[in-house]
Length: 272
Image 1 (cartoon, rainbow, N blue to C red):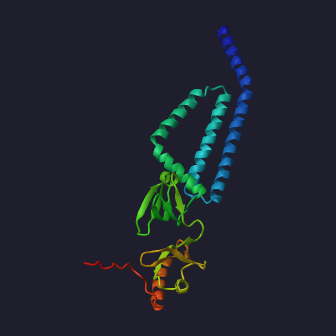
Image 2 (image 1 turned 135 degrees about the vertical axis):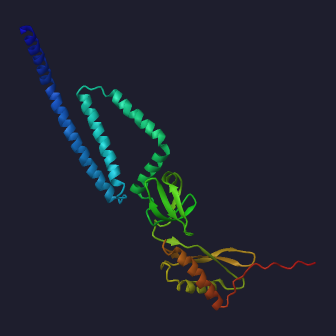
Image 3 (image 1 turned 90 degrees about the horizontal axis):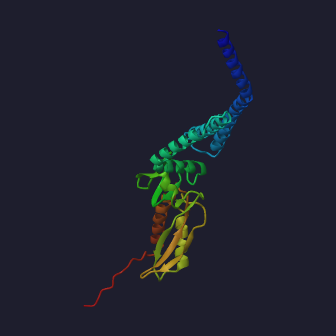
């Protein structure tokens, strides 16, 4: 009985000594854990504030910040476990393998998701902008996590995966605040160019939706039956089509009022 008691006391003393030896590492590890989690939370708040200031879609900000905070906390846990003597190599390998498997399974979706995040952060275009993405021309109606929704001038809804939208040339026609409206008007060879230009300029003044920038009215080339003129007023993305159609309408009215005939190709009669 006495021998068993001595063994228990020796075992208790041994565990107590191990606990005393281990206590500093345990305390430091707990401090690292607490401070690491606190830093992760603070960095998450800073990142959240930065994303809000950048104008990132508010629906995606919590998701992004939570992912970043969770990843930082996992790194803190792995660091603490390693300090306590836990073998973390196999755990890290397991996490890496799981991440690789998930990444391969969702490769396309993750690409579109990452592209969507980049669009929301760096804003190559935003909702309402007039854009041309891989030949699709229209206004951005919605920027989703995986797709961008375009409303075309003929009222079609086109859904473009974000990975496609960022992997090729994209033209944002609204980025500079104004658009040049490219028109072409023909004039007879016998008419005076300065007179025609004056008539067209007066007609453009009646287009109230155009911007006040001075329009370009110049000769483009000499056609078979007429002189082809470039007429280029300016508009916003919202008034582009109004300016386009109104300009043609006013120019036609002004040319007719000035007695200037708009020429058209005439097929010459062939001798029998």
